Image 1 (cartoon, rainbow, N blue to C red):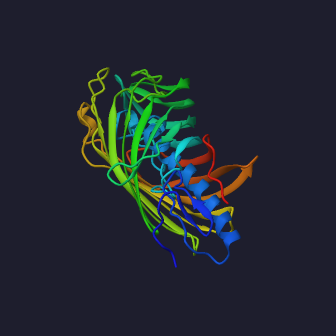
Image 2: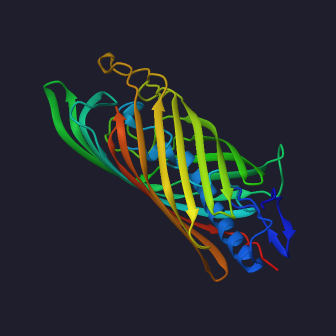
Image 3: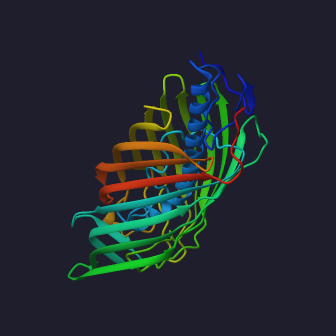
Length: 363
């Protein structure tokens, strides 16, 4: 039987603490030793995963691959940035989630990309970013929820090639850029009731990264954006099953360098997993990304310029201790399908989360 967990509550001599993504406390398991170990591992996993969420939420835009729909084919939201444990709150204190992200994709010769004063066809792109997301969870509540604040930043690399120009006045072109991307602040609220967890967030883009409106390759978005949404996580520590869904909507502000405004975007990230042992869990992830309204400022010949993409893939996670410090790791991949007006390819996320504040101790 699982009872609704309460932050920092002692049961059977063990102190439970909310994880980076709210992970619920467990009242009973078959043995105290197993309970203590499982709770500690799950808590670590939640921390890392919750860190990933803000990290991915804010960083999503700049690292999104070039394609059609949204200016330059780059959206603020990075599809797949949220996965399992999305609504599990982090433990109180400071933590540092780090996420390595790689994407490779291409679009056929009929896919047109608008960049500055040029039109690009047959786009091929690769992107790598190393994200750092310092996260703070104060020891307080707001509206009955645990607040969490984070700021994501990353150094990265992008290489893109395409046919660029107007009609017969076109030529092959390839460009690359190495530098820093935009900044992505995120505020979250986490609620917990037994095996049920909820999270609400607001995040945005501060356009300070490497950006050139006439370049094929960029790390910055070129304009501000704001994204609001929420997540739900079902986590049953007795059975080991977990399911998470994160949904949101992005509003894009005008790019004053190009007088271009991307449309309103919607997104849904999914994750399901099962613990095979105290340290190891496996599962599936997926996402759906659909543009709701057309862009403003694109050439008339491109029409509404709305895009969409869907993806599915595997995930695996492992928890371990280093010098008494719990470390969470997660590796997941996505394979895109049913893509419209965007590049089509695949991506991989490798996440490592390290608590900076003293970890919770068991008695």
